[in-house]
Length: 538
Ligand code: 16G
Ligand code: ZN
Image (cartoon, rainbow, N blue to C red; front, side, top):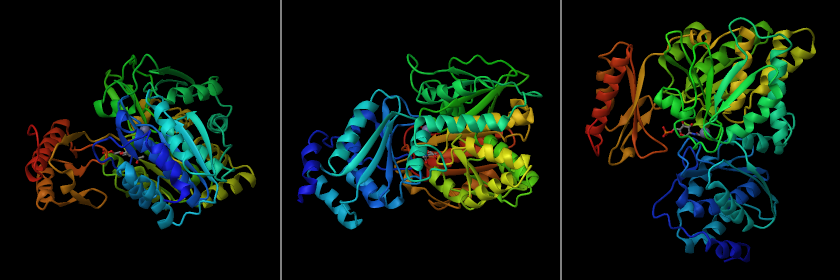
C-alpha cells in the first residue's frame, strides 16, 4: 500500500460497510435508507477528490434524496460542466461503494492507476446538502472521505438545492459569463432576469401576479424566499410547507402532487388561483389549479415544456433569428403534448430514455433545446450559436423580441432542472401573455393516463428499446401490449424496470380515464404473468 492511501485505511474504520446489501449508483446517484449510507458517503468523498484531480476542475457532491421520504438520503456527483457523472465513473462508484472494508484502500489505489490520475494536481470539491436530519452527519462522512486525499480544497456550501450546487460548479469552472460563483449570484441572476423580462409593464389580462408555492418542506423554501424578497413588488409568492414542523415530502411536494393528482397539504384551493409545488431538493416543478368547476387540474413538465417551446420559438421568429428550437421528452410525455408540438407548433420532438442525462444530451442538438420529464424536471439549453446570435441582435439595435429572449435566458438555469428558475420562467411568460392557468392549460388537452407498479422476481428481465417505448424481452410481452393497446381509442402503453425502486413501471393512456385504467391493469397483469410476478396479482 502506497503511503498516499494510508489515511483511507485509517479513517475507513469510522465508516464500516455494514449495509448488508449492494447499493448501486443509478440515475439518481446512490439512494437508500440514510441509516446505511455512511460508508457510501465516505467513499463518495474519496472518489469526488479523485475525479476532481482527474478532470483538473471542481466537482460537486450533492447530499439529498430529492422527493423520497425524510428517512432516505442519497448522494450525486456533479461533473465539471454541471452534467451528471460520466457512465464509466458510475461503475467505479458502484464498485468502490460496495467493497469489503479491507479492500477499500487498494481499490482506491487501483482507480488512481487505471484512470491515470495525477495526485499532484490540486483537487477542488463543492459539497452541499438538503434539509434532511441525516444530511449533516452524512456531509461529515463525505468531508472525511475527501480529507483522505492530499492536496484538495473543499468548499462546504452547507444548505443548498441541487440546482444551486450545479450552478455553483459551472460558475467556478470558468464559465464566468454564466454568473457569479455564490448563492447571492444565483439569486441575483434569476431575479434580475425575471424583472428585466417583465419590464416596466404592469400585469395584464387574466394574469394575476400572485402564486402559492408548496416547498415540500425542503431546501427550496430557503432558496425561493431569497428570490421572492427581490421580486415581491412584481410577483407575490405565498410559501406553504416551507419547513419544520412540516415533514419533508410528506403529503406535499411535486412528486406527491404529480402521482396523487391532488392538492398538497396546507393549500386551500380556490378557482382562478395558481399553485406550484417544488420537490425536496427543488429540481422539479409541477403547477396546478382549480378550474371553474372546482376540479383539480395539473400542469406538469409537458405543459411547462410546451409553454417554453412555443414562447421561445415565437420570440426567435419575431427577432428574425434563424435558430432551431426542439423539444426533448420521454415515453411518459402525454401523447397530446407530442402531437401539439409536432402538428400545431411544428417543432421537432425527440424521445429519450428516462433520466436527465439522456434528455440533456439530446437537447444539445438544438439551438434552443427544451427538455422536460413529465414529472416536472427540466430546463432549456441555449447553444453558443444561439447565445451569440441573440446578443448580436440586441446590440445591433431596436430588437425587442431579442431583448426578451436575452432576459429569459438569464432566468433559466441551464445547468440542470431547476424548479425555481422554471417557475420564474413560467411566470414571466404568463405575465407577458396575460394568461391565467386555465388559458395556459387550454394549449392542449391531456389524454387520460394511469401509472402502475408491478413487483416481479427480477425486474431486469425486462429489456427495452426505442427510448423505452418497446419491450424486447421477455419475448411475447410487447405483442401482448400491442394487442391490449389496440383495443382502446388512442391506446398507448409501455413498461420499463424502475431505476430507483425494485419494481416494474407500467404506463397507459387512452381516450377516457376508464380506458386508461383498464389498459394499465391489463398490461400490469401481463407483466405479472410473463415476468414472474410476486405478491398480489394486479
Ligand atoms: C431519477 C432521475 C429522474 C427520473 C427518475 C425515474 C435524474 C437526475 N433523476 O430520479 O430524471 O425521472 O429517476 O425514476 O436523472 P424511476 O426509474 O424509478 O422511474
Ligand atoms: Zn429532485
